[in-house]
Length: 269
Image (cartoon, rainbow, N blue to C red; front, side, top):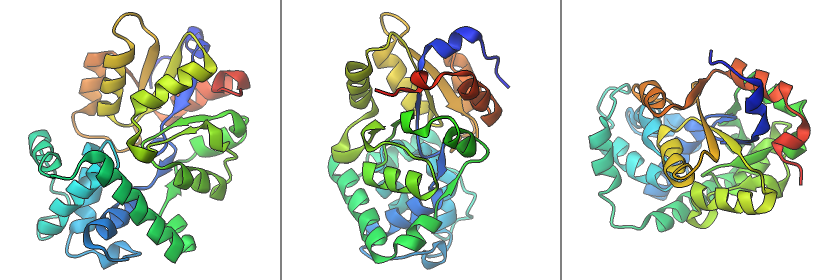
C-alpha cells in the first residue's frame, strides 16, 4: 500500500473508467469480435477456440479502443493457442501497427460495434460488465455527481453503465474517446474548464500515464499520476511505474484518498 500524504488531496482527482471503476474486459472482447467479423456475438462462448481468453490475457496492451480490433484479429487467427498465452510488447506493437486503417476510423468502428450490441440486447450488454468493489460503492456515497472521468471509452456507454450500476455521474463530467479524442486533448479541456493548479489521475494503463506525463509534466509538475493495481495490469507495469515515480495504488489507497477529500476536489463546476 502506498503512502498517502495530506498534501496529496490538494489535487483535483480524475478517474479512468475501464480497469479502474469498471471491469469491461468481457464486453470489450465481444464488441471487438463483432467489429472484426460483422457478427453479433453476445457471450464469450460465441467466440472461436481460445480467442476470448487470449483477448482477456492481453487486454492490458490496448490503450485507444480502436486498437482492440487489431488485438482481436490476432486472437481469432491464433485461437488455437493456450488462453494464457501472453504477447511480448514488441509482438503487440507489430500487431497494432499492422493495420492500414487509421486509428480514428478503427475507434469509430469499435464504438459502432458496441452500439449494435446495446441496441440488440441492452440487458445482456450491461451484464457483461462488472464494477470494482469496494471502491465503486465508496464513490457512490461521496457525491458522485462531482466525479470527473477521463476515459478512452465512448461517453454514451460510460454514462449508461455508471447510471445502470448506481453512480450518478453527470454527462458533462465524462471526457471520452468519442471521435478519436485522446486523453491529452481531454485533459487540456479539463484544465480550461476547472483551472486548477494541479490534477491527480488514476489509470490502470502505464502507457496512458507515460503519455500524459511526457506532455503535462515537462516544465513543472502539473499532473500527479497513479497506477491502479487492480485493473488490466501487465507483468512489467509495476516496475515501470516505480521507475517513473508514479504511485502504485491498491483500492484501499484510493478509498482513503477519496474519503479524505472534500466534494469540490472531485470537481463540481
